[in-house]
Amino acid sequence: MSIPSLLLLTRALDTGGAQRQLVELALGLQRTGWQVTVATFYPGGPLEAPLRSAGVRIVSLDKRGRWDVLPFIWRLIQLIRRERPLFAKSYLVMSNVLLSALRPALGGTYVVWGVAAADMDLAYYDWLSRIEFRLSVPLSHCAHLIICNSEAGRRYHVLQGYRADRMVVIPNGIDTEQFRRDAKARVDARAEWRIPPHVSLIGLVGRVDPMKDQANFLRAAAELAASQPNVRFVCVGPGTGPYRDEMVALGTQLNLGERLIWAGERTDMWRVYNALDLLVSSSRTEGLPNAVAEAMASGVPCVVTDVGDSARIVGQHGWVCPPGDSHALARAMAAALSSLPADSGPIRQHICREYSTAALVERTADQLRRLTAGAAVQCRTAPD
Image 1 (cartoon, rainbow, N blue to C red):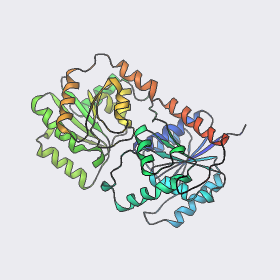
Image 2 (tube, one colour; image 1 turned 30 degrees about the vertical axis):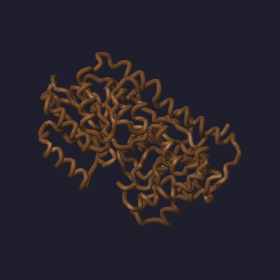
Image 3 (cartoon, rainbow, N blue to C red; image 1 turned 90 degrees about the horizontal axis):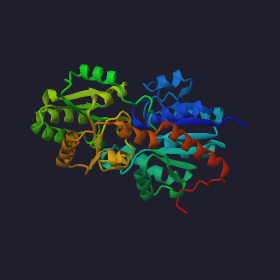
């Protein structure tokens, strides 16, 4: 029997949620005997390290910027023709659009999309991102398979015109060996941030972006801080530019001062989660937020806004409130702090059972094998 081959395509191996899921899938499939190659638009990125350590091949297409288009596309076509993978799976909108647009030139390679977003508000994105998404709707009919990481994401994209009969839901997979309770990690991280043992630490993990709605979190934090002096807050995640500057200024205006830490991007997220007493997801839109599942795997309870599959992830083990309502978020945070579970075991077990890396790998491999057993899929740019 021939070894199944898969090429995974993404913009760069940065520390975003989709990129981390790519890494988990690549490592998991390689361990089970698949031949995996990862192709990136741009070289570098912190997530290259675990792939290289495991012997996963990484190929950069060396894109020279936004307007390096035709030479870049030619390099991608040449790569796929040279590698001749049975499957090519893309991550995020631009990669998806490229694979479907190039499908006639890719020979017998099955085109598979990865979709992580839900309820996207395109008003918050630049003109090129809006064009990419609009192009993705007709081109979704050229994908052999579309894998959404959330039920909310599937519903949203079907409403936008994506091909419903080619969409399946496979939740993200969490490395439950990496993300687990670790007393030393807790001590080390809190010492770095100078958090005393008697102080509760509430964290928000995610890129500094309007979709994550750090403003909602900061306003709720200020309301909670007014009545609870032994609480501090930390925002962890990459972000530069005007929006981040606005959020830092907002924290100052709300008098959070030294009670608020801007930790930036971290590569030691298992330490970060262990430092927390509570994780908050204040997003206005989500698919399936990795940070929530990773925190819960580490035994940390969560407060989430009711967007995407966030409520589905926390189940009976967390608190849910409406998006964009800082007063409701503050009340939920207060309720959570007043009733933190003495035993974090059930929180972790819920994630290990429903959102493990092993489940992600097994479900993905099963769906890919079904493609080869099914009938030929025609490329149509309008619904049947």
